[in-house]
Length: 278
Image 1: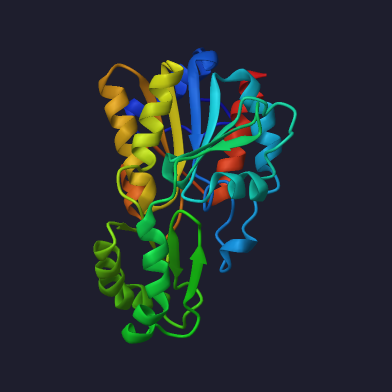
Image 2: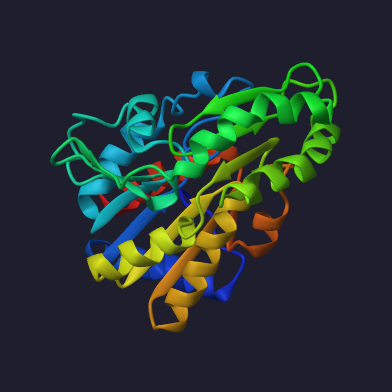
């Protein structure tokens, strides 16, 4: 595919990249935020987009049908941490937050969202007692995401052991309040059912009428989006699956057409696409 672009390892991926390059105006590029556009950090409130992400997206987006960021974060927070608002070239950017239940559009700079699930507030009220009974170790951190609540173990002395210790108690808490547990990279998130990144991606691609879809992600929550791309391929669309590489989550690498070196690699890929299409 040329000096500036890596070559996908699968025939379907090579077809997807070729379709994107041949007809970019009919392609949707969708990306996760944390771990894909932004490096993973111990404090999720300190996450910010890679410094090269916005310039690369701004150079690439005008040549595509659409660019969407699909994240478990609140849409407005992802916009702020990403620095996406008011950027020339990103006037058609869409951010689908809370796994697609919220939508922010650069054209209006407003968020559309349904009423919060009542189980989130009640589960969050019980969470301190649940964590105490479970023996959650020091360094365990709770993140209030308004429409969900996440428990991070990255700050614990043994993050993986802490994650396994809390998996059962948090699963029981979620079940009592009509929620599900979304596992991720040293995090367990209690959130409402019915929407995931796969549903959000498939609905958005069909809404736009795109012929090609490229999705990049790094975590277990992105597997649903990978499956959605497989379904869209079965409908006749071209697709490219990109893994923002991590030793913490290997499932995405096994499913992907192309593995890049974390957010650095994602930004390099975006810049390479922009250069090729310029």
